[in-house]
Image: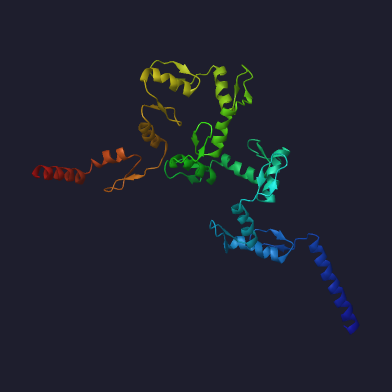
Length: 322
């Protein structure tokens, strides 16, 4: 190849490289991740993405300790702690710390729900929300409550449930002082004070502040009375009506199991009964390793061990000698 040909070849090669650069600038994704197949237009973006697969999160928030793979993600997160919500929804006035969150929120107002569940037909405005919903149909409940054994499909639902056991009711109604474990429950309760009752019965015109109350009311029109009084046999369409009626016979409040409807005279009896609805056996015998659901069952079991009986007799003798 002559020097002239080499120069021409070099010029063509340079033009080809420039053309490749222009193609990449136009959005061609030539860099692929070997782990997940995701494509990128720039090598730097691929390199930053690969940190996700490495599990390395070198950027930590000094305020809450949360870690991130990229400095940009940390910076975005820190806006949450600043309290600044610069992105406002023009339709409802709700504010957000990030533009992306506002954009996601605006889908609610659009009414567009392009993601549908193949099993039940329910639609969602986001693919992530559909994916979360589909866990319900799988029946897989990977998140278990350590205190009562109840299982949940999502970690967030378990976290919300655990507030019940904590006894913490941080959300207070300013009008009547009633407290709630969740902000959503407080919001629903506040409708009772507003006087607004947007849910009406088509059969009798009665109105309700909450849809759940309307659904309970509709049972009265069905004629179905699934809740009966154990004392006199009278039937009711609603368990709360039945429980109120029981006070006529008992003179006291009654405690009802949400799982099976069984009634108890005291709250402690109800709590003891709730163990029957879980497979958890937290009480272990120190002599034979057998486990039980309640302390009472464990104590009853311990009486079968000769060592335990002998120990009891010795203690009694010691007391007599004393």
